[in-house]
Every structure is written in C-alpha cells, then in structure tokens.
Length: 194
Image 1: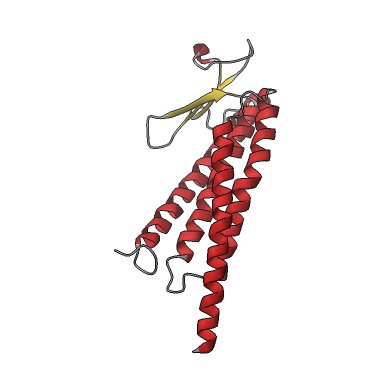
Image 2: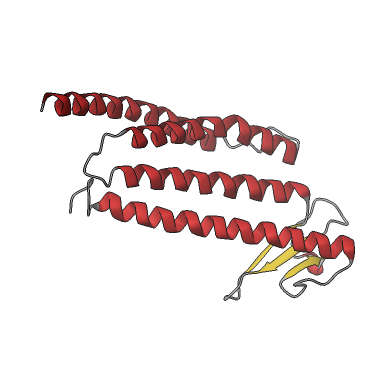
C-alpha cells in the first residue's frame, strides 16, 4: 500500500484522525454540558440530570487543595466509567484548554493527511493547514505556560519536555512547509510547460 495519494495509508490516517477529532469534540461538549448542568444545579438548587452530573464531597475520594472544595463526578453514557475532579474554575479551564487544543491539533492533522490523500499532493490547501499546524504548536507554548501559571500560581508545574515537544514539532513542520512550497512550485511549472 502506498503512503500518499488516493487509497493510501494517508487516506486511512485521515479517516482515523477525523473520528478521533469528532470523539474529542463530543467528549469536550459533554464535559462542558456537565459543568453547566452541575453549576446550575448547585446554584439554582435544581435537579437536572442529577444522577449523571453530581457535585459534592464524595467521601474525599478526590484530592483537594482546599478543605471545603467541591468535587464533581460525571457518569459517562453507555459505560460504567466516571470522570472525577475538583469542581473549580481552574479545573474547567484546564479541561477546556487541553481538550480544545488537542481537538484542533487532531483536526489540523486530519486536514493535512486528507490533503496528502489526493492525486496532487503539493497543493495550497495542504500548505495552508501545515502552516496553521506549525503556528498552533508554537503558539501553544506561551498559552500553555500562562494557563498553567494561573491555575497553579507556580512556574514549577510547567513541564519543559512538553514545551520542547511542541516547539520541535512546530519547527519541523516549518521545514516541511518549505519542502511543500518547493514541490508546489515545481508542480506548477511542470503543469505550465505541459
């Protein structure tokens, strides 16, 4: 099986990445909905989906930094799995940031592999998504650092290997963009001479 072009490994990868992105977005939407319902139930004293989206102490099963911190417990539909954590704004922010970022990360990878699944591999659309993917990886570093600093109030929780991984990915993609630009120019010149 060939790596790029129609009916190739890149076609299979693009479909897998699309399914992964959709799964991440559904999961993110479910968590946002859960936080909204739990917040509403807590502050309006309502009982919307109270058996699925719970807040409380839960016998101190979740580590908490504050002595009176609330915890959340969201049941995952069609399974016995449960999501647990501290019911705080910083938890909501970190979930929103990381799942949102990696949903976008997976979407751009999907678009790149979809662009490599066509007969004309060097095209402007693939170059555009490669550029967005590189920018996403590089801009992730300061945003990640700021979000973690405001959540933990410390720079010691920022993982330098995580930062280096995204920086290296962004830089490598910038070099790949240049190869794609040269390939696009050669392909355009070849098409004009024919």
